[in-house]
Image (tube, rainbow, N blue to C red):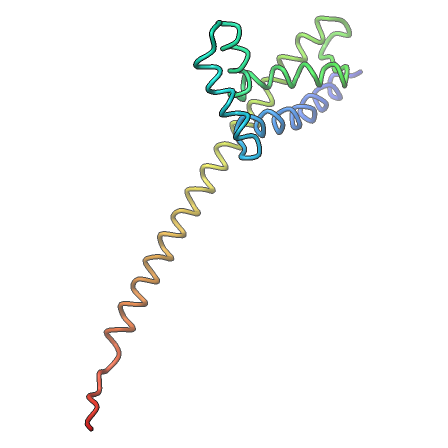
Length: 144
């Protein structure tokens, strides 16, 4: 396969790797298993047990295992058609997937920050509107 096509595959295959690694290590749908893994990674009796469970809590670590799965499924190699191509391709996929996850995290934080700013501005507008409507109303005494 020509190098340009290999590079295209690299950037495309890294997308689902990043998606899976991020989802398992950050999203609410996997919160309970992740909390179990966090606890086991801190309190495990052996170093092997602690490290095994830690890999499910770190997107960088977990992306290596997801990449291995994708290398087996896709048989993707980079530069070479033998074991060296799998090795180079594997680390390249991890690197690109982690760039994707970093960009996603950056965008997500920025979006969250904007949402918070918007809510604060809405709250201020609502407080000012309520305060002004009360002060603008004329109180007319009622005589019986």
